[in-house]
Picture 1 (spheres, helix red, strand yellow):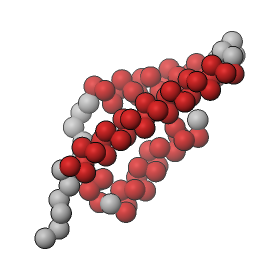
Picture 2 (cartoon, one colour):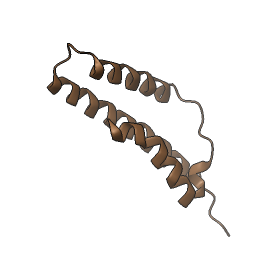
Picture 3 (tube, helix red, strand yellow):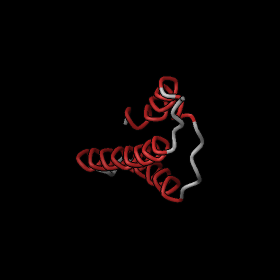
Picture 4 (cartoon, helix red, strand yellow):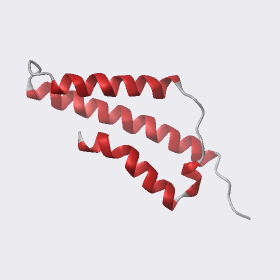
Length: 85
């Protein structure tokens, strides 16, 4: 759960080290879907009737999806980075 919350801040910190990460990325339906899945997974993890082992699986799955989403954007930005002359 903490890694899910920290992912955006880590991305911003990485942008301080690598300026090409600060470039805008195009709109993405996949990114929006991952956001909705994140919200649903976090709500489900907080729901009292959901057993603890299932919350661990939900949180791990949500983290994996978020990692994929950020990774996809990082690769896209890396391929389009400008190399100083």
